Length: 539
Image (tube, rainbow, N blue to C red):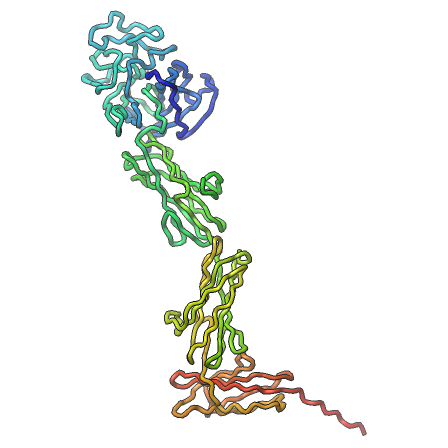
């Protein structure tokens, strides 16, 4: 044991328990009371798929400085004859003491057959009194001859086969393969058992130091989110999209690592406010996952993964804030254009008329939304050929300011508005083709002269006059911007029907389309009135 100040005991293990240090209440019963320990400080649990490590934090180093009492239990279906152990510390840097050199010592300790020089001990085989130098367990029958220790590892004597005895061996174990791990010359070794541990059996031994960071080599855990068709460290998804997490373990022994990675979701970047646990997954080929799929409310979330570690790999936790999920509330963007006194999804105006667009944002959280809306005018119904520069306007509480007015040349155009989204609201785009602007050449089609004459209930035939060399095919009639009739010209004529209108002034537009797609418009104002009622004279 190193005569140093008490080392800190690792708080990272499969299970953290805090029990009163009494034999009756010890967390692990696989070890007897040795020194100041009432049971095992660490327990290696061997299963068919992995070896996990548990810790009883109530058990300090058994000689109060740094030596660790280790238990092992075989919960697998096969005998266990050896187990590799490593840590980034001098785990096997034995210093000529051990579990028979404390008070009380391990039960069954006896004087070694030979001292460190190979000379026979006169009291070989006798029961050791407490703190007697040169005491250890009897060499297991299956231990082979020819075992050696590397420099820096001190023995307390030699066994019957003149193998070095460290004093840290348990009642049925010995150490081989003591070698470096990283910068630690004695950080790695193998504990062998004879007879092998049958399923359900347990035994114990000790090691020089409890690893502060955990058993095995250093590990690092990185994670990747997947959801809504995206994969990455930081993604944004629409509300309702399930999201999963996956982890990759890095480190010297990561490729062969076993164990479990657990996933969790937090609402703060320090990962202290848990939103939900997201399940766990077994490591295989250094990867684990996916986690359980999580569907979250709008907001920003921070995912974190934790690897429990095993005998060859230290525990690891991904950095909080390295993985950010933004869940956005879906929105829809709709628009209405205004120009020439008309306001509708589809309007026709004469050339030179300023026309603007205005967007509205709908969604569960739109009443508190913010952001910007970009407006653009296109020449094609797929919104790929720009016709006017894009203008932007602020959006607040679901309503955007109007676009800048445009005065395009004669033709057919299509508006599209794009909402930027904000911290909780998803971006959205109005449907291309949902808003059509027709800009017509203003000519006299023969609709009629402006007149204040009452035309109530009037229905008349109009013969649109085409410019020279132009053949008109279709005609549309609008009254105050609302379509009343549309279709092909019949014998070069169409009907203007003012019947049923209340008294007032109505703007009537006749819009004609030529064979080549040119649009022409003639607009007149007609006045309507309610006919006087005729009363029969009484005779």
